Image (cartoon, rainbow, N blue to C red):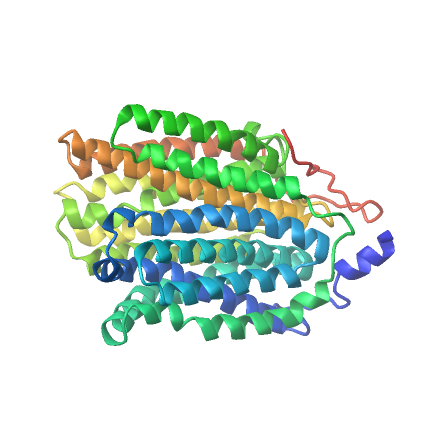
Length: 480
């Protein structure tokens, strides 16, 4: 394929001034609805899973309903990025939605907990495809001036699920049964995919390169190694757990290095630093977020509804932070915005300790955790923007899949570490509250490391040569 043809297939013919204008209208609506459906499912499953376990049994497998989803998402993210660069985003997107819908159907009809976990694994694979293609569509389909607004809009798709998702899921489970939390989303996802497809087909294909089976195998190895590592973190026997952690790390680390941009683990200037910073940010935020309700209910004796308000507040402030990023990005450096977001997130994470102290009114918990959400919205959105702005033309899929993969891995490892820390504190007689305090301190240190990595981010968008299509700030090769 000649460069001239590639340019025509990657760049839309018009330059709309709004995400809702011209050929972008259906793409925007479809992507937002697809992300909204996936977000609702992610938030609803945690609400209905206790009811599901009571009916199906398998309480010992409870955590794997989440872990299986996260681990297969790693594979989906990696495969989707390469396939989108090779074939264009439309076909991988359809595959992702099809897998997600299949997982919904299998989950809604599951006769046992192992089948439900397998269904969640299929959902996670599809979710990885959807997330990767969504950001690729922003990179290829939207003009530079609209990218910050579209990223903020995608973050906003989590607001409604964050506000009403758990409540609606609870009502549906009480009235119609927990299975309809899965089955009821099937038509929504199909309609949303049809809308997005109208815009995705206009983005065309990327290259005539052969499918990279080695990369796909490496993604599977990463998921397997990460799964073994997480199992080790949660093992009751220290010797067995240590062997699993070492073995999982030995498998996962080389695979991760192979899938990331060169220099990611060293925070090399540009995209590598952005990918590492984003992974550490997700590790710290979700490694704290997962245990905020536990602290409020178990340590402070609040109701589940009251504890949920803290998560709702973080959802709202995350969205506010994303929109602030969109407003500030034209006049502020990327490094400056990410650093500010990381610092604000650290304040929120360390405030989790204050939530557990008796003199602090529990009613302040939503405001405290909302601080973390605000910082997350600013930093996360800006980091996504850095990757989109600096990805070489024609390699947007690989770049976006790398950051999505690192985000998912960071979330899984953060929650795994937190579960292990809290379990050890509880077994040792200190109680879950002390474990949450230790986790908050550890996650604040992680954010400090992320702040150091963020100093290797470009301050301004990379200039791309119209002749070569290459970024002037950082190339994007992958490997060790």
